[in-house]
Amino acid sequence: MSDIRVRTARAHEHERVAAVTVEGFRSRNSAPRPERLALLRDTPGRAAAGDLLVAVHEPSGTLIGTGSLLRPAAAYARLAQPDEAELRLLAVLPEHRGRGAGGALLTEGIERARSWGMRALVLDTGRDNVVSQRVYHRLGFVRQYAREERENRHRPLKTAVFSHDLGRRRA
Image 1 (cartoon, rainbow, N blue to C red):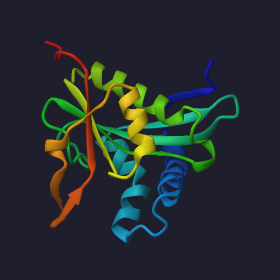
Image 2: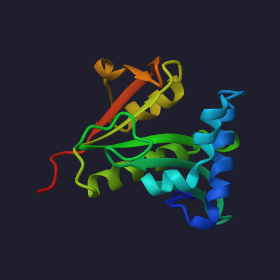
Image 3: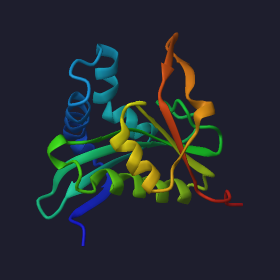
C-alpha cells in the first residue's frame, strides 16, 4: 500500500506548494530566469487556472510533489487543444524521487481529466529528461513528435510532448 496521497492543494498551502515547485525544478535548472521563477511561484494563479494537485507523504502530511492540471484555453495552458487537459509544472522534491510521487500525480491527473470529459491529457518535458519520459511511457503516454516545435514568447521552444488517450469524450 502506498504512503502517497494526491489531492487538491488548499489555499493555506500555496506558499509551501510554490517552494516545492521551485525546489523540484531548481535541482534540474539551477538558475531559472526571473519570469520562469515567477511562474513556478504563482500557485494562486495556477490554482485558479485549473486544479493544483499535491502529492502528500502520509502519515507525516508532508507535501512532496505538485502538478497543475489545466483545462484547455485556461491561463498557463500552452499545449492543450479544445478537448484536452494539460498537466504542467510536475515537480517532486529531489529527496522523494523514485518513490512513486510523480506517478501518483500523473495517475490522478489522468483520472481527473477523464472526469472532466476530456479526450486526452497532454504534457511536455525536456527532451533530455529520460527519467520522466520512462514514467510517462509506463503510464500509457505516447510521444507526439508533430507537436514538439512551437513558439514560446517569440523564441523556439523544443520539448518532448506526450499525450494520454482518455477515451471518448462524454456526451
